[in-house]
Amino acid sequence: MALNNSQYDAIMREYDRKQSRNRRDLRERQDRAYERQPRLRELDGQLASLAVRQARRLLDGDEGAVENLRKEYALIRQEKEELLAQGGFAPDYLEMHYDCPLCRDSGYVEGKKCRCFLQKELELLYHQSRIRERLKEENFDTCTDLCYSETEMMEGTGLTVRRYMQRVIAGCRRFAREFETKGGNLVFYGSTGTGKTFLAGCIAKELIERYLSVVYLSATDLFDMMARDRFARDEEMPEEGGLRTVLDCDLLIIDDLGTELSNSFTNSQLFYCLNERLSGGKSTIITTNLSPGQLGREYSERIGSRLVESFRFISMPPGDIRIWKQREQRKRHGGEK
Ligand SMILES: [Zn+2]
Image (cartoon, rainbow, N blue to C red):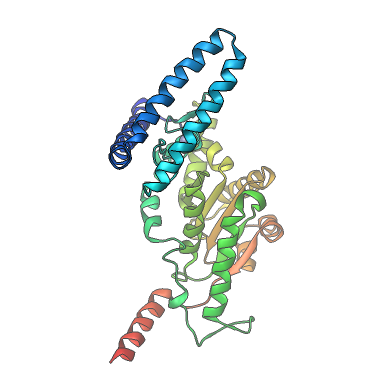
């Protein structure tokens, strides 16, 4: 699966739009700053002519002069900084601000696609935009432990459900924060409506903001994709390539494992996928209604032991957060009367 021309053009047009928006924003900031501190305009003019002089002398092989220019340059910059501070502006107020500082919104770094480009590519190829939309609502900022019961106990922990979930959420934050250095794999298991997908989404959002590649697929879509890939190979059709991204992305989220039709094909493909990712040092998060024991029985012994060896299992409290949420709201509402 590769971008077609119109998809590629759409991405490049978006970069063009970003660049012109950022240039316009810079001009507006300049106008504001020059109005408040007119000397800034002079200094920017001096900096520009200094750059021209510097280039000329370099071409003349006059390295001593270049050193002098450098000093002059530093003095002007210093005066600029002081004027900006006096005017109440941030030190980088007159610098160009980029959405992606890595590629300066060009989409490419040293001739290779930038991380932000690859992320756009993922969004288009794997129809991730609906999920990206959802993450605007579902993330660590909106993630509240309020909807978990303060009185019910979480079995086997000696903690109330709320206390237990506070720890789980803190652990998820840590997982996201330390992702680049520690990586790791998680299984969130528990019944429907307990917040598994929500938590996986919170982690995804953090990583996407750092331009890491995240692919989110329901188990059904994942196996569908693997079946198509297999078909393409058997028929000697040109390789789709999409599967490679699924196997290589920084984080793969497999949502709702166990709800798809499982058979020997899905079984072997799940093993292949997990194995490829583990041996490549890539992280995977699985959400499932099945307990660790059920997973081993439902799929295979070797998948079960792979998971137990390499994944951290996080049990979600029984019940339905939507019901708890309603109950909490009623309680708060009742308390106000
Ligand atoms: Zn970039």
